[in-house]
Amino acid sequence: MQVEIRTLEAQPFFKGMSPGLIKMLAEDAMTVEFRAGELIFNEGGLANRFYLLLSGKVELESPTDSEHEPVVIETIGEGNALGWSWLFPPYYWHFDARAVTPIKAIFFYGTRLREKCETDNELGYELMKRVSGIVVKRLQATRRRLAERNSELMTPV
Image (spheres, helix red, strand yellow):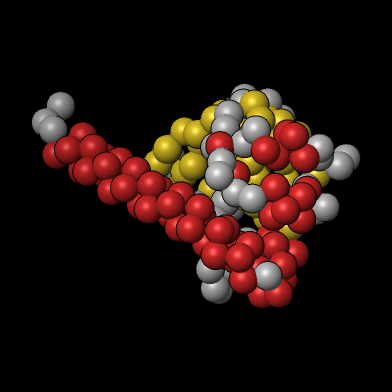
């Protein structure tokens, strides 16, 4: 299902982006839904998708060995972008993403976005700025969560 331009304009990820670029992105935007508990993507899988969450919550998880549950790095929800690995070679996911609640999202094919970025430098620069911000935020969340987990493991029971 096609996404209206005004729906894209309302997304925090696109704040300050020119109407022409948003119109270009709307050509490829679709809606998608996931059920609670559904795996949206998994670490090591081919990263060829990008989502903007319209509703629901997603946990970003880092798998551990088979004896332990995955480490939840961050929980994200409405208004957040999901998936940055589509933009950076070698285009593989760095986390698992699992729907905690039912999800409604705007969906883009990452390969198509990369093609558009190659032919339109303004679009490429705008997406690179925004996606790089997500990468930094997720890196900080990962660092915090790992520090918390180490602290938990070192605390005597």
